[in-house]
Length: 470
Ligand code: FAD
Image (cartoon, rainbow, N blue to C red; front, top):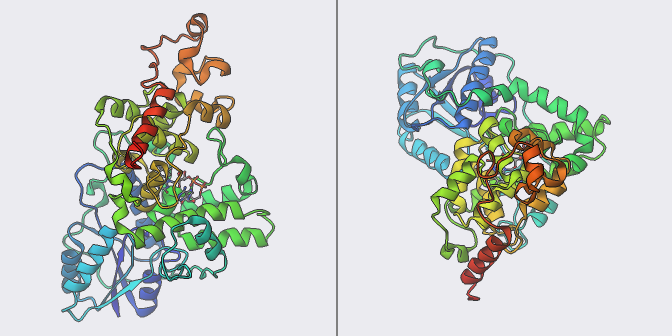
């Protein structure tokens, strides 16, 4: 049999059910369809590098990747006809846009004799497996996690060992250098210095995490100045690494004595599963708050403050350090993501969807499920979200989680010479301390764009309004 395998957010060879099945049925033609948007995002840069890596892996197996552009239904139909393919296999995705593309593909190609098969998406379990006693999707993480722990997660599938193809060339193939996934402005240069995407690198990163961090993860994971998390999110988001593969690798590490306490890390992987699960069952959440009272939230359209937030110039050092880290590396530590996102939504009263959009443009690990749920959690509009009235204080958060200012000094070199005591609130430092540190407030570092206590009260008043208490 001659099978086209449509690669999507699964840029790897291991645990790729569609590829494995196709390789066992005969010849394989791997195809990737480029995303259709005008300005490349940070995740597009990751994608471009992942495609190069995948191309190399396929070449080692005697095959190659066909990169094309267009709507999936049209492009895949055309390739199938021109290459005389017998079958089309792909792994499903759970986000609304991908699901629509799958439906359109199945409807359009229904008339052909092509054997079309959709394989399971990259989740620990099929999203229809876990339900409450009443047969409804879980809305609370604790109950979901308890239920997940009682399940057996299927083993990942091994990578194919050979992959023969029946065509050598295709007329509409796009060379990767012309994919348009890299920014012509070169802003991805600093991101490039931070990351090496691809399946091979994902295994190396996992091995480093397993050997150096996993056993201390629970103690380290909240401190942005420490190398205390896996940094696997970009690999998971692009599908360089599969979630089932990672889950079982953690168990293997435990059996082999390399992981005494894997639960805290598995719990974070379960948060990823919960995000995917919620997006599958409630696809509107990308644009709509899960809690309907938030539909009437009085959002602000203060564009000046939004720009200050994006540029890391709010005058709150932890928020600014996070936003600068994001711009320069395409990532941000989870603790800081929560604080910076909360600052936008609660201190500035700017709609979480605007923040989510900025993260979509700038994160290398952008993942529609994790990002949407992360923002809804912070905004208080998700089912199992942080209560709206619990408002992060960026100053106390930085004192607690960046006690010696390692993180802030790294990303805000203009504050580096301030003693710890004044690092978190430069505006409160005595004049001579600022002079000594070569800081001119309002020139080299901004005054806070909002006062914490005033902003907190304003946010609580806005919340009272939608709750009908005012
Ligand atoms: P680790 O702590 O090592 O965790 C391992 C893996 O578990 C992560 O790679 C990720 O896949 C998953 N995970 C960890 N924490 C969470 C979480 N809170 N929710 C869901 N999955 C989690 N994560 C993304 O992958 N893409 C995003 O676009 C994204 N946007 C976010 C936006 C906001 C506002 C917030 C608060 C969080 C967001 N997260 C997102 C979740 C989290 O911040 C990142 O997954 C984490 O920082 C990645 O670093 P790591 O791989 O070292 O994580």
